[in-house]
Image 1 (tube, rainbow, N blue to C red):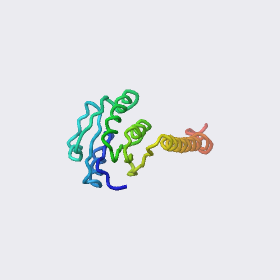
Image 2 (cartoon, rainbow, N blue to C red):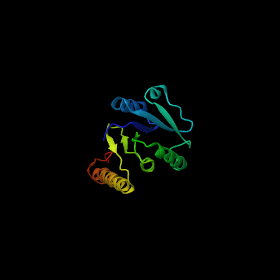
Image 3 (tube, helix red, strand yellow):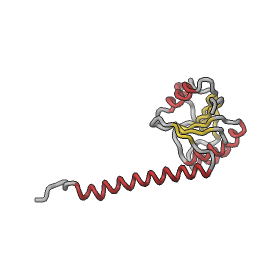
Image 4 (cartoon, rainbow, N blue to C red):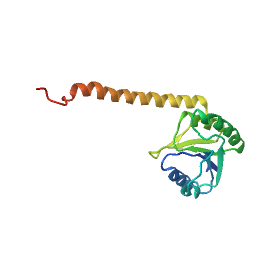
Length: 163
């Protein structure tokens, strides 16, 4: 895909959000970066130097359930703008569905470990991807529980020696 002309990034209250904006500006210096934020959010000075424009979501939150209606209304507005690139600092089912509703050319999540996660822009791909992640997460959780509670109980010495 060619370099994006417009990049919309949904605000995150997670630490290091300004680093995400810096990263995007460094790799796409010619792109117009727009910050999508809820009502009442004020970008910090370190965030302002990397963004070109602001778009306000009509709700006070981008989280479910109160933020769903605002995200739905905002997606209709953004769809009309013709977004090249929509980005998030993390991914969730709500943000994935928001990306599908906005109809960008590309949607990604920049994860905290430095990975760039391409998000599918169709409902079937999104649900399949989420199911695969859930199954993988449950497998790891069950394996951890097996080691902690079954093998650990059998192999660990007692906390206090019996007298």
